[in-house]
Image 1 (cartoon, rainbow, N blue to C red):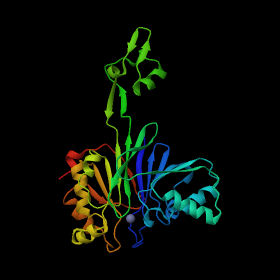
Image 2: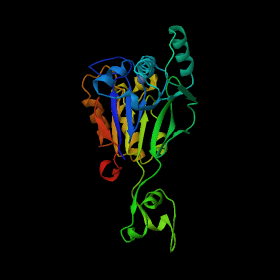
Image 3: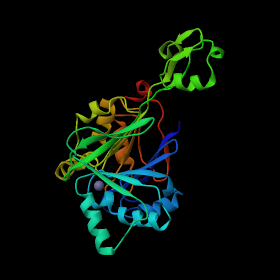
Image 4: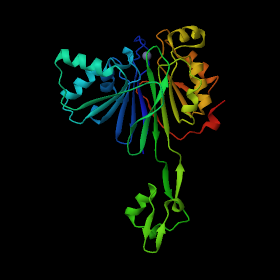
Length: 311
Ligand SMILES: [Zn+2]
């Protein structure tokens, strides 16, 4: 199944150098999700040909403007565009009140059902489950309640073992066995565990923005295939990073290294950095497979090959 991420915004609070505010699209097969929705996200949707009709849910990390101020405009546009499919938004506490006030005073009535599910940002929990994957919160530490999100497949890719005779199992039972069900055949029971093998482990994507450096985060995202981590500052500005509850590129890379991540994409860059080389080079000194996120680029979630990637 196709599992990929498109970063649509890479700046922090101040627009600079052609970068946009935080917004990241996650696509899992036909299910599309948005994480954060900074000001102007719907313009990024137009530029990068993102179809809002496919959006299943939106995940907001925290209630600083650069992560949600594009939301009200996007919700209205989807309604005017004829959306009928319900939409769920997951967010730390407070978003429901913000949206209700704006809709109340603008007389906005959406043509679709909007569910805003608020969660406490202080402990990891599974907040959404779909057929083949789930989403958990990753408590972060910022100036207001903030959560990252972990997207995990719940089923590994499976196939019939090569030493088994596929012809004795009817086609409908093949699919069921790949999902772990046993098959009652005419000559007895065929146990899925004996017939099926995993060809790769379930894949994971972690989104961590905004946060002060959290050493324990690595344990919560252990083995993650793709890590998106904020890197607002370089090491020269580490004091500023601590004061503002942000991370440096080296700190982001340290989380990636300690988590045994497959690949790290840095984002949420301070406007003081026109060029990002300093951030990327610092990150690479700790975790080789680090890069600066590029707006509009697609990042496939590939199986983690960390052994060759970490320094
Ligand atoms: Zn931010």
